[in-house]
Length: 468
Image (cartoon, rainbow, N blue to C red):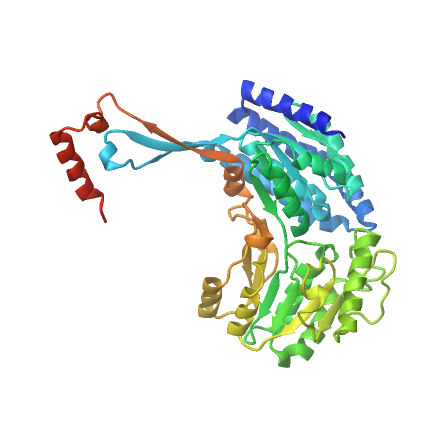
């Protein structure tokens, strides 16, 4: 799709928005329609996602994409009226008797760029927030997963008018043209590398951006926490979608004397989670040959630099976009898998004995999208939360903080900027507009020029009460 056609759709949306910004009733109807679309087409979504990957379990798509989407819509419908209310605030005393309040207003037409690893969720979840906030929107799903992108385009464009919500599909050149449009807000989910390009492109139009990126999310295991339980929860979070999850544990930190027990515990966990994993129809494949080759290149690089690569199943078959789970011991900072987000079923183990040193290790790196800490001691947990910075945290489990509708989801620093989900998503796609209403007679009327002796005395009096 040419830039001219994209620009035509955007202009059409902006004209329609200015003529009639979506009311509460229209937003509510649009959210209910989106819910109906998802329910009526969920089998098509599931089939398309599986085709994109070569194999992904129906249950995984339901649990990780369809159900969270429907729950997010339910939450937005339930709370929308309250979110839209104006909020009165205490006014400045020297501006008495004025009143002050703020209200959230839609921005206009927003662009949403989805990601291939959870195409349905990561394209339509920001749309839920954009609709709730009262915006028009153009969607661009990822071209890496073309079947699911095509289904999203088909069902969205059949349900909504072009001037309100529209979906476009295409290759990387479309993404480049898309990000250069003068949207009122641009939302992107993807890699750090591409995120930088998106931000650079949007900057030409001073378009505000939300970047949901990734990075290397660590899982720190305290020596006081039951290792078997930690291993099971880490591997469950790691192996959803075969590790192709932005908040998957990217590496583990634990004391060296726990290596053998951790290895045995992860082997046991994998055997229970995915029996006969090579033939198991519930274990996802890698999205493409290119990504499969990238993961093998990481393994070769680690092996050549002295790492020990341990298979977590008794036999391996890594062909045909399948990659079996592996632990990596004796890793070093020079290895590619310790410099880049892995996005696959490979889990490096970093041996650090104390929690304090583990935190220092994490803090020396870019802020992660997620941080996982396994410890039952409240003081230790509080200390870690105080002394680290990440997009989100789950204590004694992995990934599930992103499913909390009343918590914001988003990165910090290299892992992204801006938040969405629930009220934070509504606010992200809104302008928090300040309003002051002055009365017929106001104190400020006595402070206009010319500044007489009386007014100087009055200013001096006010000044005495404005100091700390």
